[in-house]
Length: 170
Ligand SMILES: CC(C)(COP(=O)(O)OP(=O)(O)OC[C@H]1O[C@@H](n2cnc3c(N)ncnc32)[C@H](O)[C@@H]1OP(=O)(O)O)[C@@H](O)C(=O)NCCC(=O)NCCS
Image (cartoon, rainbow, N blue to C red; front, side, top):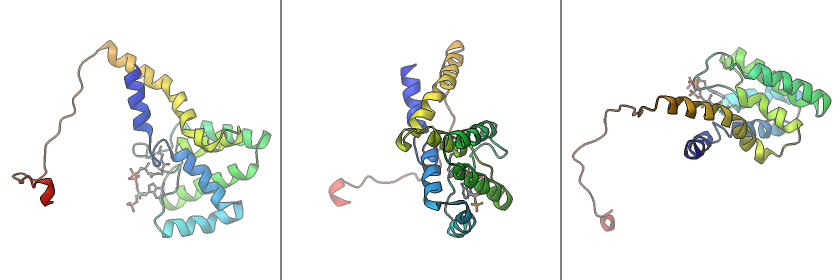
């Protein structure tokens, strides 16, 4: 169990994966206000910049978790935070769907939820990881219930017949 959860945390790491929620709030802070969203997005897309919290490797439709977090973000922004974060987020999500057919993912609205709750940005990914341990644990238990070794098959397609060059001659 410890090894599986440790591995899952390592797998979640990375700015385009578990770290995207930090990127979302940094992006919103960089844009600054609702009236600057359109110009910022246009410039970013023209420069092939990735928009944090948008797109998913597997889900090509709306991530089922996103609408729940969106509702939570709306309520929290109204009660505790500043409405501009959710307004900017909604504008970005609408525009990315219309222009690129890409949906907001789970990190997109979770960033505003965490921010409104006063959680420091550096802790966004760890907090998200803590929540995921329940699902990871379920996977571990399922796997253990029918504990067959999983070994992905692969076919080597790289070069063959290469000579080893001694380190001092490289
Ligand atoms: C998650 C991610 C890595 C998936 O990448 P992917 O599988 O290559 O995405 P797709 O195959 O759906 O991409 C289709 C097109 O949309 C573009 N695209 C995908 N996500 C984009 C984003 N966030 N911003 C701008 N363009 C994006 C791709 O560059 C690609 O363009 P191309 O056809 O001109 O090459 C990517 O969407 C991303 O980097 N998102 C931002 C980071 C993020 O929020 N990560 C958390 C995911 S839960």
